[in-house]
Length: 373
Image 1: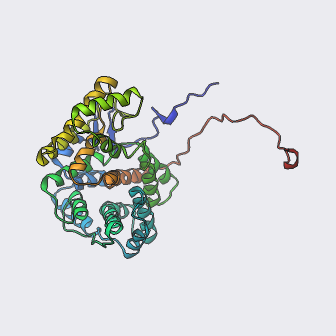
Image 2: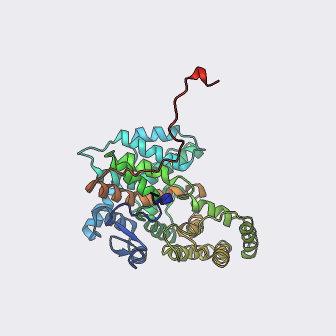
């Protein structure tokens, strides 16, 4: 009897979730029933994080209290700062966040008095500070204060990064981007977090698993590779010629297509609009024009559409975020979705343990070493 196989678990329904739907039942992408279009246009990231964790949008009083809570959780403990100072400035930024998360788990372990919600909020509030503290110390030896009075997480990160308050346009772009990246059903890193959570491990371990999964270039990092490509060209015409050559040589163009979506990524049009706004504001339309031409070539030649990562590249670049930090921004957002999934997994837990077909050699006798020649 031949066992049906699903390489990469494509098409396998591995569980139930009430957190989000991705292109199913004609609903597009929504978080707990709310359209991503409405959330990205009208909500703040803090409202979305609250929605994902607590299952409902907050009212004014609840949102104010939640923002105050996050603001109070931004500063890093001394032990974590010392650990971050030991990491080389040349380290991969995702390694920094993975190490920072694991270290914080040892310094502030999950317990009845520091439960999964408290841990989730601590990580939402402090990941951007971890990255910025390491980034500045590695570059100049400066020990920055990771507590700011910026109301939004996006504004907080940009202020830590640049040392001054961001423009309203940059703040709003990053807010929208964090919402778009916050959650995406059973993607690879989320599933990794759920697998770890299913063993009844602590939330820090589950999040660390997710960060390690996102570090892989087949999941995270496409926005970084997209930016490296876009930055090579001085005009749309130059970009078209080069990309056609890359396609002829069968080179992979990062930031296009998606494992789940078939016609388009509903998040792409939203971040594309922000990319255009920032390009117009900075009078750097060449970057946007190059991006748009690459999109046109890929649609015409390969019938592939840009995913969220592609236009995030120019949006982040125009927002002054260094390219190596693009994927960590993904972490700042996705910790809310990861945490929601960990909590959901624990609520109706069953150990996740698939089976495999064995394709190795048939049974064979053991040969003592002296007889192996």
